[in-house]
Length: 475
Image (cartoon, rainbow, N blue to C red):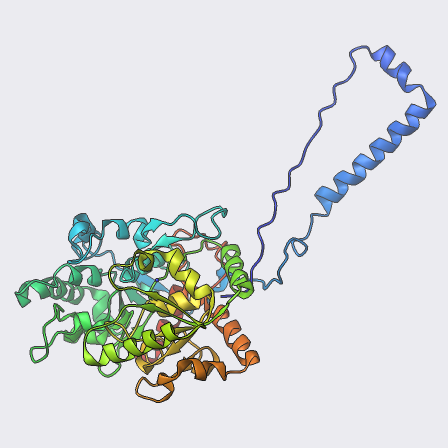
């Protein structure tokens, strides 16, 4: 499901005219003898030299090349500053890349082969904005694929070290989300847990683990924590026991949804959206487009009704209010509506809206939250666990600066349009500006991006810096 923008500059085309000298030197110099021609030739030579001096000695400045105001991106060379040095374990293939050999069975609901392509970015998208860029930043990225993108980004990260003695972070690139989703229907718990248990055995045998008993190690998982926290007393919906293993509790776990009550070592990371820029130019162009976007709708909702008393109530209420309002744009996703699987259609609705309703889905969190922020749409939350208790490393401390909160049991949630209409325009504009400024740190940059071209801190940069600080406090 950022910064301001520097426009791409037109390539300067320099033409060098080759002069063919006359073969007959006598007639040539006789022609030069003409007084008027000598003056003209001298003037032409002088002007040519002056022009070459301007082009090569005084190159044109970039500040005149853009129609938008420019915020100079932060140089990527300063991302580490000695604070982050991450060592990446070269795990046996069965824990990550080897799983991709059977990509058609990595998820019991869908064929994941198209989604694991391009280091987890998925298939390139056509007919999106910025298509004229040097590299296409748009991909049909699966919502539960963050672990692959994270791995590819860290592999190519300027803060990576190949010397474990110099590392303050140890990344264990286990594709746990892809593995667990391939075994949701496996009835035998021992088989379902086997790979997680083998991972723990492997880590225990590493000298780098024993140094701090795993407190400086971390995992990045693309699925919610609930998929790795099966207990004998709780319901069995296909989860394994990875996060309940004692040794894993010593580690830090990055996950798209943490357990708010039993996830003290869990830290929320953004769901991946569809935008994976390779340069600061792409990022800033997109941000400026969102600043200029016309938003005729007050609010919008994208989603389907849900089964179950709790989930159904707030969803049904949102759908009802939106359909009754002339100021709400709705994209209903029941009955297999193809528009709900089309990133262009999803982002179009959000780009035309000032507020985007974010009801809890199958769990507390939604990829839609990050699609909304990418679109410059102010999120409206109905549970604190949809964002506020999840992504503290990535979001401003004051929730009211970038979002609206209505408790799903409150009277406010029954009159959404009225509540949103009361927010002054100046406050809405300020909130939207904050949302758009947040885009870079909630975006996963393209894993192949050059460190020199990527002049902003993306979600992986933010996570590594916060992790390093967190680990320093543990050891």
